[in-house]
Image (cartoon, rainbow, N blue to C red; front, side, top):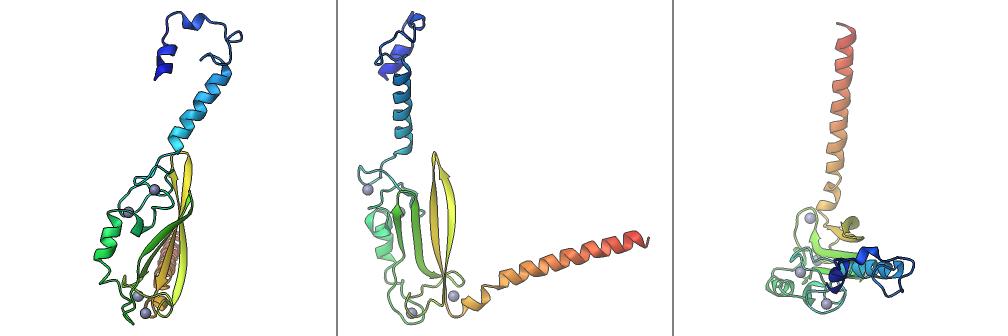
Length: 191
Ligand SMILES: [Zn+2]
Ligand SMILES: [Zn+2]
Ligand SMILES: [Zn+2]
Ligand SMILES: [Zn+2]
C-alpha cells in the first residue's frame, strides 16, 4: 500500500524516467517487479487447511486445497461425510467396502473416482464388478491457469451395454431430422 502513496506524491510526475535510480518507483525495473508480485499474489492462493499453494477446488465443499489436503479424507467437512457414508458405501453386488477418492497429480491436474456406476449410481467395487472404466476430462479456467479435472466413470455389468443407448437416441434424432428435410424439399418441388 506504500506504493500507492508514492504514485500520488505531488510533483512526482515531473521526474525524468531515464534518470531515475532502479529502486525508484518510476523506473521500468521497478514496474516489472511490481507486476510480477501482482501476478504471484493472483495465481498463488493458499490452501484452506495449511499455508501451501492451493491446487484444485474440491467439488463437494468448493474449498481450494493443496495437493496434500485435496483427497476427501484429508479435509473437513468432506472427511466427516466420508465417515458417515462408510456403512452405505459397499459394492451392490458383493458387499465389498468402497471409498470415493480424489487426488491431484500436480497443481493443475485432478482426478475423481466415485466408485459408483455411472448408469445406475450404485457403488461398485474395482476388481470384480467394474465392467467398463472410462475417463472424461474437463478443462476449467481459473484466473490465469487452467485446471484439468479427470473423472473416472465406471459401469457395472448391467449398465455397460446400455450406455450406448444415448448414442442410438442421438442417431435416431439425426435420421428424423434428415427425413423432415427430405419431405420439406419434396413438397416444395412438387407444389
Ligand atoms: Zn493444505
Ligand atoms: Zn471437500
Ligand atoms: Zn463387487
Ligand atoms: Zn449400473
